[in-house]
Length: 286
Image (tube, rainbow, N blue to C red; front, side):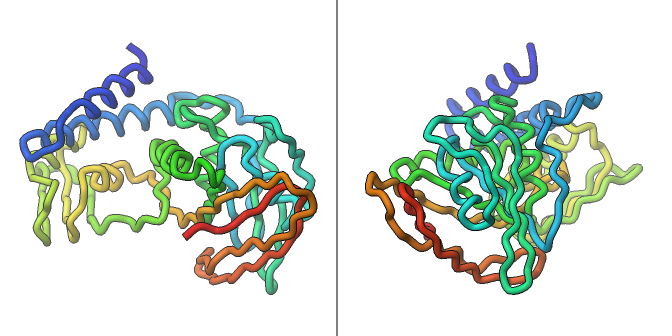
């Protein structure tokens, strides 16, 4: 059985398992296995050639990655605010490579990347998804663009794809001290009461990763998923701004695109970009 099949089996088992106190331990172990297989899927042994157009040199004071489904308006936005030419059309998969643009604001040089549209299953490699998401991990901010008529569906779908490859949006690093030792077994010390973790669960999850000696100091109430994130140590915590896109049949419609105060590399920018387009209106969501 391949890794994808194992992942699918575990996801199905998690989905059909009732969530209560009696099943918390079983679900915790399943989540540990799931994270382990996903890590193996994303970091296979050996190194293959990099995808053409995806190895973009990082420049400027901050990097913003435009993430969204195909034909949602990323290329149009990039062209309007950076004067970068990125082919745009009404059909899917117009952008096939990562296209960088530069946006200057009050002396700050912000690099904006137009990435190919993400499709469902991107975290498993569909639609060059792994290459796209690998570039997204190098960003300082994710700008998630959503079709306003489908935003309630697209936002959780895109978040799920990014979560599957270790990108955490608008979340803080869990306050957990974790260190692998040479001996002494597993030392589990929660400073505050834990709603989900137990010493047995922590020990068994670590054993799944062949970690038999470690010190674990938990300073906040965390979930099993947050504990696994700390153990793996390869998660990327990024701020994310969600933008809803409204399509209009009228030509020559003028509008404003307002990006709220952002934190990029400890520099705060207030971006207010005004532009005109023929068929698209963007409005930042709350």
